[in-house]
Image (cartoon, rainbow, N blue to C red; front, side):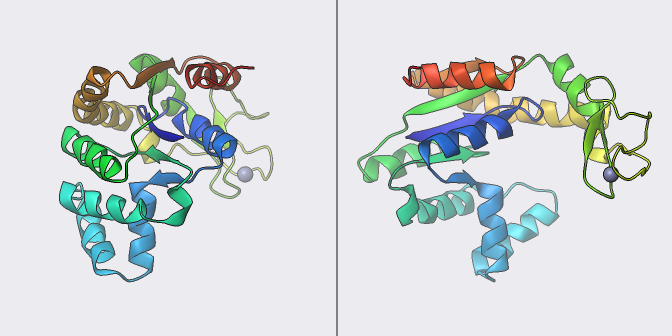
Length: 216
Ligand SMILES: [Zn+2]
């Protein structure tokens, strides 16, 4: 099964991705992870990618596509893969199609998870975390016993900068600008499956499985 999963931050994409890789026993490939591995292995491409990332810039398409091409030659992707965070634009999507065509394969599905912007903002900006044990709470959906205090160790909970409303709005805007054309590209190819991310984890998974032709 060769799958791409797309969706804005806070839509529940990570959870569904984990269920899919477990179900199909396929590697979960995010370019962010490959970049970090390449950097740890002290490769030149890893160093170059790191420089872009630490400047807050996107890694150029040719570098990204090159490392994906490399990754697709590994033995563990013979059974399939799940891409997460790639392709990020039409150039990358076209490059991926070409790579797969050369291998005589193609994508089976592109899963696009969606949720109303206001709901995503509420989900993320309501998060509070404990810096001591890593526990994650939510001001409405998963309250600690005592407001603002971790149940496990009594640490004062904090809101991460990434979770601030203004930051979330900015991330959503960037996501939309980048990926709307990619979604259009796959829509034209008839490969896209839209999944409503406001449902429960179980409902989301059931819908994805059904769309992928897995009955019961
Ligand atoms: Zn804690």
